[in-house]
Length: 238
Image (cartoon, rainbow, N blue to C red; front, side, top):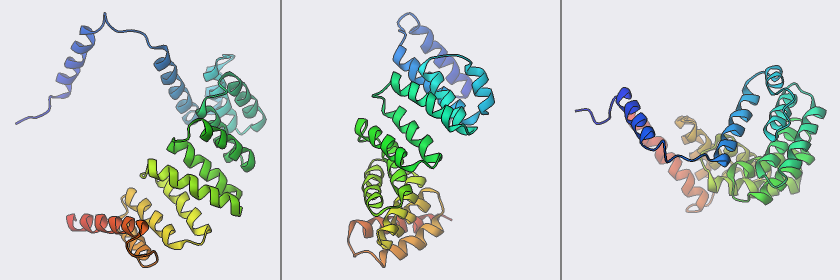
């Protein structure tokens, strides 16, 4: 018995739905803006900088500034990238994702202190965003100072609490714990990272290591136990 319609049936159903609501649909400039911005940002990172710059031309919109900033960053041409980011920031000063992008560009350009400042502004504007908190923590780790590592750990734990399934975030969290001398929790984060990546053998190894280092029954011990149980269940399934 077929429980799902075939692709052609689904397509016909969607066309019928769209036709039924065609007269009721309303333009949504805000949604259109964010779609165009996401598309432009992705394209600027994936397509060649030369193509992006040629495609954008002399467009003076905020999205165009963003695309040029990314393209110049990837060339790399840090001065021109910075100029485009300043123009974008002037247009959208309270947009957390503008400051997040600025922080990313600065971090990848190894300008760690300015990157921390940009990410900090993004966190102020969107304090509960896991992506931004993760970037902030990464920038703080790049400073490689005692205070930076301490602040990074706090930011990364907040990010993990909101999104515990990001391998890069978990890797950074392990680094932050290790730099603070907490190798047990570093192993917990590493075990979770391998579990998220599907590398269950490595996940189990680090989970067992963590359970031998953190206090029994503590939150970290329970997290490691969860990873170990998941890895063992996966092994039984073959």
